[in-house]
Structure formats: C-alpha cells, structure tokens
Image (tube, rainbow, N blue to C red):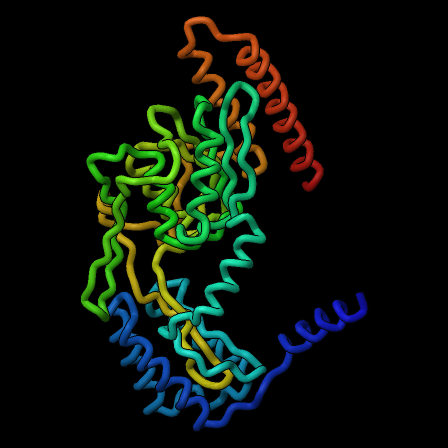
Length: 358
C-alpha cells in the first residue's frame, strides 16, 4: 500500500513539474508543429495555422513564454481558435518523451501483450444477459479488434439470439477499433446486400477508406427486432460511430445524453523531448449524410439522464412487445408493471436529489 501511495504521489508531483524554455526550444517545437500539420485532415485549415505560426516567429512571438506548461496551453488555445477543432491539442511532459513514431507498427510482443490485457477485460464485453420480459442486454466498455474479440462477441450474440429486443449500452464506451464497429453492425443488419457504413478520408495520402458490413459473422444475426442504444457524455470515437451509423440507418433508437463529439481519427505526434500533440489525420464521413458528429456529438432520439437510460430503454422495449403481442404472457405483463414502478421511483429519486442540490 505504501508503494502504491508513492507511485500516485510521484505522478501528481510530476504533473506540476515544469521546465524553462529558451528561444531555440520554442522554435524547434513550432517548426515541428508546422511540419506535422502537413498531415492534418483539413489542408486549408493547416495552411492557415502554418502561416500564422511563421508570422508570429518572424515577429518574435512567444518570446515571453518560458514555462513548458504555459507554452502548451497557449499553443492549444491558438490552434483550436484558428481551426475550430477541439481535438487539436499540444501536451507538455516534464519527463522526456520516448522517441517513437506514430507510424511505427507494434511488435509481435507488444501485440501479444495487448491481447493478453484485452482478454483480462473480457475484450470489454462487460455484461451479456436476458432481462425480465425477454429483452437482451449487451454492455460494451470498448470496441476491441475483431482478431481479439470476435469469438467472444459471437458467443455473446449466441446468448442473446432468442431475446425479443436488445439494449446495447455504450454509456461508458470510449471507442476503439472501427473494424469491430463494422463487425457488430454486421450482426444487426442483413447479410445481403452489403451496407456501406462509413468512409474515412486521409487527405495526406489522397486515400478513401471504406467500411462495409460483412457477409459472414461468427454467430447468429440479430434481425427484425428492435435495438435500443444507450449513450452519454463518455460515449466517444468508435462508439459514437456505431451510434451515428445505426441512427442514420434507422436501425436503432438512441436513449440518453449527447455524446462526446470526437469523430476524426488521428495520432499523437512527437514534437520535442517534452512536447507532443494530438493531430486528426483523417475525416469520417457518413454515406447517408456526408457529415459526421465532430464537435456536435451524436444526439439521442430520447433525451433522458444517463442514470435513467437503461430503465427507460427496458420499459420502452417491454411496452413495444406488449403492444405487438396478441395476448401478452404472464412474464411480460409482470415485467412491464415492475419496470414501470422502478422507473417512476428512479425519476422521483432523481428529482429529489436535484432539489437537494439547489
């Protein structure tokens, strides 16, 4: 326990450490930013920022900034102001950064370690169960690569195969593999014809990367039944892609709160021994809208507080099943009554909590 406390305290202390910058170091960082922006997903915006940085350098700009923390914060503010892109961010590290390229592929040992860590989390497939009234529930904390998680996802979909409606919980899902997004979409859509899910434009490479559903999945497809997606402020990147795609295809009903608004893929770019930046290098485009959710987030169809989203979805699913049934069975009738009471109580409790905070 003592060693753990030391580790935490060390991390906290490191976050407050700083270095004094000289003009040469500032110029090196700025030059690295100018070069990195050649791969920015938006070339016109990149040219605007590059011209601004060069002009500031010519005029002796940034000369009064000595602190590494302040320099990173100032550059982040300027980059975001000039581009309107909240994802562009410069980071400072008081500890020297490893000299690794974002394009360096992982070694076989690194891949094996990643798979082992993913396996310990059950590939971020956190819960699979049958809720009262025969509604399925699948909770995902991330989208792990299909080569890691494909078999486990197939097992989960087999477990859910005979439920009559499905709730997929993405409220705490920060994203992951676009290939896994395509695989899970494939389970929820017909095998033929293939469905065009998304495009990613990579301007620096003059390349368009398309994503389509697969004709083959390892378990039973989940078709002709309602899907409810739970989303919230922590739902980000690949999880947002999944929600946005199914919303545009009218394959799911989204319940909860607006997502994080992080759409465009990118990578960390090392600028200097003590500075790096996140740079979006691609732009996601939905084939239905020609747009994405960057900045705006994915909006729910039914906006409810995150803590009420699961119970709301369960009640909606049971209500739909009851309406469709010629003669609702005892389990469905009892489940609908119970879940309605639970939802009403949760709403009252939340109102009371909010009232107490005033």
